[in-house]
Length: 502
Image (cartoon, rainbow, N blue to C red; front, top):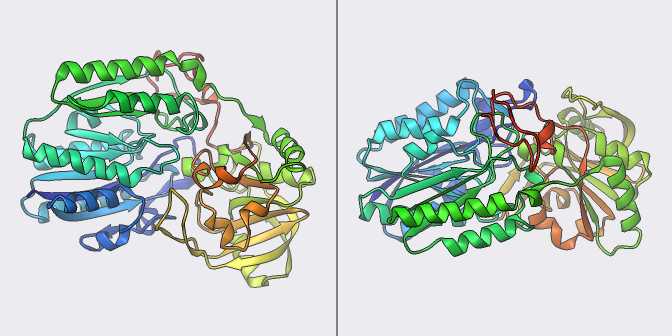
């Protein structure tokens, strides 16, 4: 069968995050909560059995008899821009490895679709442009992209096909890889490029409002499934990543198939469905103080914990993960049986390990990123539990993955406990709490620095879920963002003000 080269570079860029939190080469080499950068055959073991797109692609392509040639795969935790040094170094390695691989019949790239670098606003489009230049016009180049991908002309023009995730929380990453492999299998057997169609949606959708477990996105994805099939080989909807200030920001519908009219009709029908439900994408959030007050009232009579989503400090969206607004609200209102995960403060984690379990230490916790309205939280903390940060994940999103977060600590003050780590990671898996001896189901209130992904592993136990607004760089109300590069005519929020253009 075919000889298929495989590579991937993943980053979701929050252009509003502090410049001190850029993704440099070392961030890609280490991988954060994901596997470290790998090149060549070690890629197979590095991602084996994980819910990653590249893992699903490997499994499906090899099951169909293809020879898979691993090039390079890496991931960096969402943050401010990827540095020019990191991008050019890793892209250089990727295309050097492609050149060294010898003749191949197709190329698969596992990308995110919302990478912004210091020198390219469209990092993924630039990677696909270089890929097309490397393999020529006729070879099939297929790429997976995230549900939050910001689809651009360069991405559409240089990829034979793009396949987007269909769930948020992203529980279908491996399945998306398998779907892309099946499509590439068909493409290499028929070297005619499929017809494509795409359409941008003229309003921005806040991340908490994109969840596929809730309306209107749940129904939209069901309609997508109905429209796909037959002459429409693939159909996708990407709501986009609203924390990236770039020209092409915004949702996109796109599709591929062997019949131009069928593909164009499917894309138009799905886009019209999204646009017709614009008002349903509007968000409703609580302040941290109001959220804690309501959580305490609910928790007093509920059988399961109330979840507070600290969405604006979500490290999975490029947040700094060290703002203290929700912590302050919990402590000042006297919350009990409450835990907050996860505070990024390497100095606090180090001091806790030096002091040992049971010790009491004075700390000014977090709050060092210079976020407006935020400051370190001073208190006397008890070191309740220490951990090495190495633990397995069993939740739907991260199943099969082992975390390596370095020294971690559970610190308590009053009735509130805080999970602290020296590595940024989104609180999307119960393993982050269990590693430090916390039973999530036994808590009254759980604060999580996450927007939506936590729902995959925490929603079933929750008596209520509240999205709260504390200081952070992942601004939930997109109409408040200072977009300067966005093209004119795009509504900054559903039914909101219109961009004047950059």
